Length: 88
Image (cartoon, rainbow, N blue to C red; front, side, top):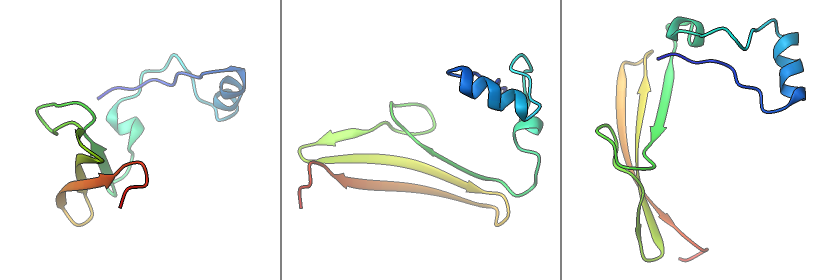
């Protein structure tokens, strides 16, 4: 995984510069997460090999999420049902 900062406006550009970061620098996972204490969460929006995407069923939406925590070496898969439009 690689990442690069991409400011959306001049204010973000100024804050990035004040922090001593370079928008041209391509960061590796070690740059992005420089610790053994990592917590990662992802929710599928569209279908992928890792997670199913959001499914709408009437007044509900179903989502699938993955939670990883390095400290406890746990992996959680969460299926959730969300009521839409204030339905009960």
